[in-house]
Image 1 (cartoon, rainbow, N blue to C red):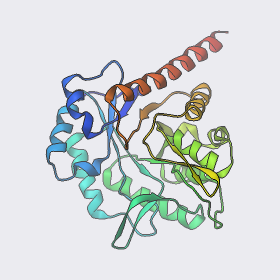
Image 2 (image 1 turned 90 degrees about the horizontal axis):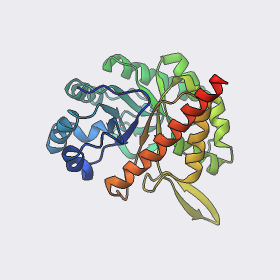
Image 3 (image 1 turned 120 degrees about the vertical axis):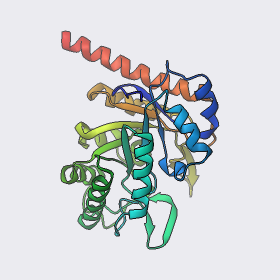
Length: 287
């Protein structure tokens, strides 16, 4: 199976592009792909396409169903389904979200935010530990996009995530779009977030597009993954690459799916930012 390079571009693999990627693998633009594993449980035609694509590209799993932030334990059945798929596809990495979407028998079609409290941190860490034990590997947790703050918050989001890393040994998937969305909605500078997060624990970055919406006279940024990456997200990504070592970077697009060429052009923009930052870093070091 192909092996992923740490510093190259990846693409969120979606069904409209299966055949095109198989027939003409875009090796010049990307070196790995990422899937939502829940879409491939139980086999089927999607699984057959995935088996073929993994012959050309290393695969990363980005889960959406573990509900790591729930007060209850992670579903043992869901973990077993993940483990079966991991054994079949052999992804080089697995990630999920610092959020919740399950309570009892209710499964919600969204990734809901957590109040950043000591109790919720305990729940998150317990579930990360359980997932890492069953899957037999380190997992990455992604920072969420949020549209409100909780009065119960006892710490910042970055302190919450940093502590989860320290207590469980997990790593981070840093979604730059989500940071920009939160910065706008809650009134802080995205670069302040980057300065406080434990970037040494970041093993992957996501770039995506948000959608501005006016609600009661105020513009809210909504994390839709349905547009090209906005300039403020590119600027924040540029800041990150100028200050920290590059990591695997992914273009993520889920709604209003464009032609593959548009996605690959987004990958090229990100790659150019990484390349420029590396060149500047080498120049500064030589000086």
